Length: 185
Image (tube, rainbow, N blue to C red; front, side, top):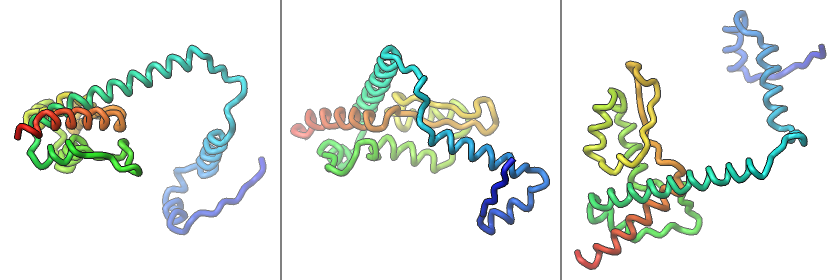
């Protein structure tokens, strides 16, 4: 078998030296090289991608985007009903800039969820979720995803779907709500 020398930074070499007795360095490097080479190789020509496969994937993509937009609309309408005037005005009049992408926009539901996670209180089961939903009823439209269920360290997060389409639906709902109420307040 041919041999190959590799160079590693000093700090990595020091860490490697501590575990070398329990680690097959050659096998680890071989596997990493196999993965990287496979990733860079073109797809084999004998892979059969049928029109049926493409149509199924296209349909699933459209369903996912529609569900994300619908979820965003529901969250946006619920949020608008509870929003403070300044926030409602800001988002009701909001127009994304040309360079800004909807997928990168942090609308209030994303800010809320980020804040909830920073509290590090997202453990403790369904009682915690019930408390969040009482304080932030718009989150009832987001899918709750559990990690480590039934474990003492279980945690969850809210999944909104495709962020771009979620934000599109959210903004549409808030703009519609703002249009209805702004002349009456």
